[in-house]
Length: 180
Image (tube, rainbow, N blue to C red; front, side):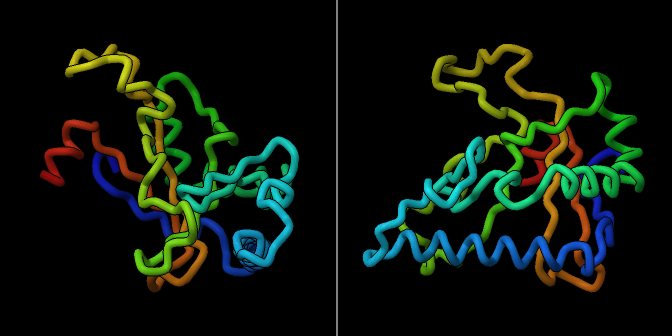
């Protein structure tokens, strides 16, 4: 589990996820209705205070759907298994979750993109919030890439052991070499 993509099956049960998936589906239905020409409701009216919606990613922050108690259940489930053990052993500065950067994202086939949706329009992961344009060339400071773990939890069928948790662990240079 040192480098690569790690799959941790059954982090949460289908029974635990079912109410979350129902609320997520209902929220996307409300958003789709608000995007329609006949709607007088803005999408911002559908997002609770302190939460955000990113139209280019068709995503909303996780607190739009999950309560603090449900988030604690999620964190405890991750922490209790091998994913949590790996995160604790790898993250030398301790573990923190930035809920303002924790998103619920729905994927769309390109021909079904909603208005303003763009593929990976905001995606930075390890460079979260870093302004690459302010550093022309390749002279990036050492803190440009964060020491972090990105977790993707599939909420729909995606294999025999869904839902699971995938962790991508290689260093950036290694990861980029794999895709070139």
